[in-house]
Length: 112
Length: 111
Image (cartoon, rainbow over all chains, first blue to last red; front, side, top):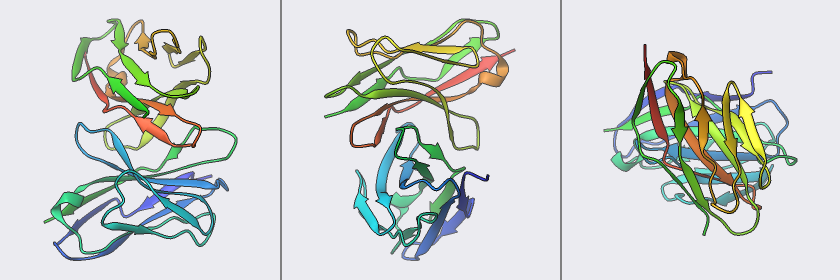
């Protein structure tokens, strides 16, 4: 049982490039989340999903897109990367019975 | 709206010292409360939780009590170790299923 896995671990992008951050969970959780963590700022919710085919915006969705075609996968797409998107990105999941979320190891993204 | 406020860090302690990290919250309804820990270079791990008023969560020597009258969920440990050095996040879980995080408190424990 690997839990929540994220790839890549690190990435450097140039301004205007695009990329997809991958997130996969093997716990059959319906709920999945993407957060960004900026220094001293805690975690901010970008997008979330309550099940395959259903996604919704969180607190800071601008500049990002998501899709949820399967229960296991919840990729986060950055279009036209900007320096303001330099951050550490965490994916998380939970089942419907508890509010406890399980986190992946994170992706550290730098946009220069 | 819902929010969580934690004491600012960094907190630096000597090994075997007593630890308190303050956390207060603002919420409508009856939220669940969590403490997560993030070790260097890793993701967040659940440390403990409490789902209703007066519940005490505990794990690995850490404790926190859900105090509705003071809207607090302070984290305590009687004797910290160097291995406890990490960033600690207080979080609130609302009926919508989302977690609202505090800004995190960095703890550094010196031998």
